[in-house]
Length: 217
Image (cartoon, rainbow, N blue to C red):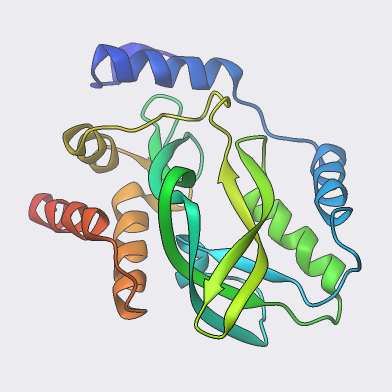
């Protein structure tokens, strides 16, 4: 990484350089092995729910037969994951959301159709599991119609892509300066905030960040 192109603080720069040093995409074989390991925890391949807490809210990219608002305990939505491809570059990484430990998270669960389910899961894995940053977990999601166990992609706190908790000022600084192959990091954050608001999902910190971003754009 050529650090002269990054106007981050020394501590953030060190984290970004560590991420870039160790970052690599999984092979198809590694991704398939991860998928099969997750599916092996199920009794059978049917009636699968998926938990969405960020871009899956506004761009799920899969068909579903039912969706519900829900809450999971023990994790919170956080811009804690470096993005050096989708929403940033190695020289100026951006941030994307992960489920970080502690607190709770409001989101939505989607029930997938049982037809062609394995291929649906493979497409989902290609999108959400390009490398080892997330840990696929089956978590209890509390809905108004009862608790369902759903697949959630949880941040691995030991992964080099994990940024940790940043101050609001640091988060804003990183988000404003990053753009990747899918577009500006600001767009990603604003799309998520708007989708959560439309779904009546509460996240005051994210809404405050979105207001700050709009002030700077």
